[in-house]
Length: 337
Image (cartoon, rainbow, N blue to C red):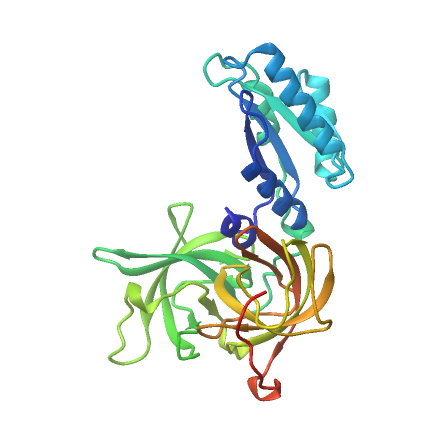
């Protein structure tokens, strides 16, 4: 779920709640992540046909109180009529409210307004600020790789900037040796149909061929966090980066050497705290932190949003700059708080 919210750049987040069980701890985590990433949310309360009336009303009231709280600040709009639907759509588009739909997949109650609401949702391509213009150099974040019989290696991903056409040459990387290798885009499929061009904001699949002699692309060639980029960007992987972070929750303290799992776009890798702007960090603290990836370099850009976790610890931040290894002071970075 974290990879979907952080890496796939969704326009909206829909949280499904069991009317009988109420809002569970895992749903609270999903809500917190969506709020931290500024993703508008929709609540769907399901199984209303089996929930006792008093239990359903208690859970719904608790959900409304939570949405009105200072931590969330999304006034609930309970959608029952067409007028409610219009109000919910207008306020939700500005991220000023959270629509609540009560549905039953057995009786079909409430499904009509929900379908109409989803059908009227508008893409947030420009508002999200996560995508570059189509005129920019191409940048594709790979999220899945397939080996198709008769075709070869096919990579699927989200185009974060630029345009891509068949027979275009791109760089694939970084691999574990921090290298980018030239590849050729043989063909493109968008929405399961062959396409002549795809651009920023679209998700597509690409049939790839290596342009390095005696270096055939295989599924093992790929790893989490690899990208396809235009050669004009002069891409390189980075091991150290500086980020401004806020600690959403931590039971004790965070200090130098603390290790956590970083989610930044499609990047998923453990990183250690190399240095901090203050000695200790606790829940609610904000600081500038230098992280070091534990295993191999990653393709990072300044301004990217990152989420790090370790057990129930959660933190959110933004990449300020990618750092050269030679410019980082060496020192011990082992041990945990």
